[in-house]
Length: 459
Image (cartoon, rainbow, N blue to C red; front, side, top):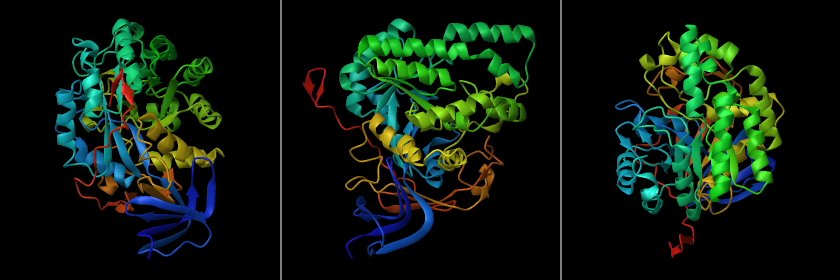
């Protein structure tokens, strides 16, 4: 038989949907896609109406934000169960800011024996060192750089002030990699936090009041103007506001590299229902916004103004998310296990073509991190990373599957009309339903395709 694996169903591509389509795999790579009667294969599954999509690439994961908590052993297990076949991990690890080639190597060596899916890495800088180590991190294999206009912690998650941000962007520009930035204006946020504290509001309302829309939008102008000044592709790693996507579009219209990522929580949760109900378990930076804004973001998806959809996944222990004083809680939520079915649910409910699922969670992330020579599409020659979703109702509960280091999730109780039934990594089945089959170490470190010339030198 010519093929190792053949899957038949509704094949979802970035530009079209193949009803009664098939995907054929040979030697861990996509070998053929087609319509009609699928060919023979050593393993052959006729899924009928099930959706067959490229495995998702989650552009924003924090596996090591809390020491001795999640780690890659758990984050990549959640990923496999959720149809995510590659994660891009953030550099703000507790105890190891990823800001040098040595730190990149330490993280690769640490993650490789644990990872059940493939992983790429972000790098960042220590503000005291500036951009000096950017080149060595590129050579070590980072797929992008991450900075923040807001300082959560001076060592682990530092603010990068405007002049230093400009210098870092200038150093990154010749490499062709992208500079991703957390978009909250430090001075403005601190002023609004003080106002909230003075008002004595401590409940669920406090977080949104402490970070009103202007704090996000001011930062986005800084980020994109820095990109325009330096010629570096500028990327905002999460935007909760329709206006932010319009700002990015204006910069692109003027010829600059300016992209925005939308996290799945901004397309799913709202302030007046979910934050009110969940309190600290829905505290995220930037904040979850009102339902009207959620619906405006879906319009941005349909209009093509969203570049990526990600999770910003972090599994804080429950005690870090349940303080009655809203501002005292850690920011961020887990989402790897449920991003893909949540996006499919939201798109179907709003009549948005599912081609956007293939584009925003696979094709565009692969391009963004320069992994598209091997990842991101059901295209012959690329890795056979595949997720299958069946039209079967389920109600999400993070504690039930056993694939999460924490049993809580802001998505608990949401009905999912499409459920992940199988995930394949390079043609090998790594999850079947909620059961993760991949052993630790099945995942590999993936690095971007080198640019031909970096700062005038061959690579």
